[in-house]
Length: 471
Image (cartoon, rainbow, N blue to C red):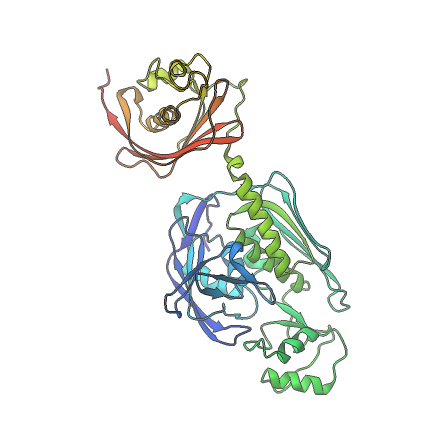
């Protein structure tokens, strides 16, 4: 696949279909991956059901982790999603609709490689939208005392995973696997197949499960002596003439793709299950003895933390010791506003897509004389006006002679006032472009912070109009 810009969202260049049987149901399933717009995420659609319901790939919709990860919502149930989720995460695909005509993702060879191959075959399309990464600023830990599972997410500059397994097995021993970055996934992790122990295989066969199992889509670890009679019974179950045990304690003559293939597959499952967090993260994940149940519980903890703290990642830092990018004189050259209606004191950050301004609120503001004089509160409409003025500087930064243009605001949407702004507060005014400026139309998302709290937010649309001729 071509090199992708990690700061952008991606979908597929076109639809692609892959078919196979479900591991546990044995049902033949056709799965079609279809391109989706920015912000869509990963969603599964059961086109075989009457209403063709859709379920989002979200940890909140996980209903079963017994043998694989299963989602259910809106009447749509989809199981064994971890390998396709890992393939999409590992190839950098953010937005895709996964159409299925059955209840389970096809197992293929038990790895994510077949999915990576079809994704590479159709190719990725870079979208005109930024991918927002969430960086952790503290450790997030999960521990299951019964299963002796320990997982931790450490702050890091990228996304990496260390996985350790120890099943007290003389065949597997203690294994570990590393993923230094998702760019390694396709080559180092995707080909690694699922594994199970012989006693687990026999138990699932006794329950009439793994109907889609084949001798080549799982590594079977022989963890005890096996009689010839048992091997014949397994051969019959898998419709093979003969099954044998290799010296390494692996059933059926399968060749390991890596000496630590089981540990790498556990890491693959971690990638797939943690993709259900729904947000791309930057963290170093250390997983000791992970499984689907613990992966999902850990993913819930990470998602809960991000939802609680997501606004914090975007809070601009204001250091009064740093010189302003625009001081008051420069602001007056750009904006037509003057006392008492100039509501931006300085600009501390300005790029092609974002502006950050400062408004110091004092008790001497003219509006406090008439707006709750006994309980001074800054009017919400003036907070929006302050945002609009900061947005005007962002908009006019796109033209070479801003003094000859004005910005007129056309629309305000999704406006919310969450906290009061009082005398003594320092308002941090942040405006971000939602899309490139076209024909003078500027779409922006505005946020007012006081300290680390969001006090006001709104989406604003403005138009740049030339009102004066240059001298």
